[in-house]
Length: 216
Length: 163
Image (tube, rainbow over all chains, first blue to last red; front, side, top):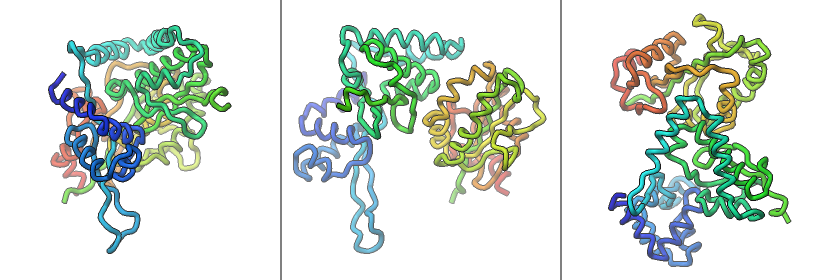
């Protein structure tokens, strides 16, 4: 754990900053100052102040959106915010599971043991559902940090909880993640076939068919 | 001003059976949609094609009939990454062991080229050899040990190709 990480995360103790961070993160893209202020229910000036603090701490990134009209009279480019790509984590006592995961992923790759890894992941997925039969998968996914949202008849996942590993070993980690999600569905008494690989840039590789009960 | 650099990638896959065998049939059937995906992908610049009319024709070369060659040029590492791992191409990659053998040595290599330059296949093969013998460098690297175009721009090889 670095003190930078702790300092950055401590900023989120402030409820306004926390809610601005959540607004920007949930949008999955660029959010303007006014838009964030409105969603968080604070003034534009206050929002701007806090958003910039979050940028300084490396929790958000800022940029400028070009005005839609070009040329004279089109005004200044608007400042926009998005969630920073870097990760912050704090663990007490200090823990480092990512290094161990990287070692193990490397071993799977060396052995060509993808299928065994997927089987193991499916079992873990079933266990993840432990005692929650009948609950919606979206709820468990949300608690696990996948950030589910609905789009075009599918439940998509904004965040990849295994991001660093998925960059290192994309085929293995995405396959394992799909198997985890299938196992989770199975454990919840849902149809494992709802989960499909549907990767797109910047998001988790798995998407779910919307369940019948959600459509009611 | 620095000229714009593009990324060349060569990928060599060891087929389990001849390309026209039943074992490879499902893979061959996927060539057309997967290539169409590449051609339409953001950042795609060029790929080596055997035929302009037959989308299932694989590149014919002198390096061994069991080797399937993919050779393409992209605008950046990110755009190539997004095509390879963040598109339906990932689903095909997951099935690679059904059609291709695992090999211990490097089977893919990338390097930076000046925009507009189309490298010959032989150069790709030389870069792959270089990666095998000398390990990753700005002249021959992989996603795992990648180099930015600015790290490669000052190299004599790039200057040579710009002439």
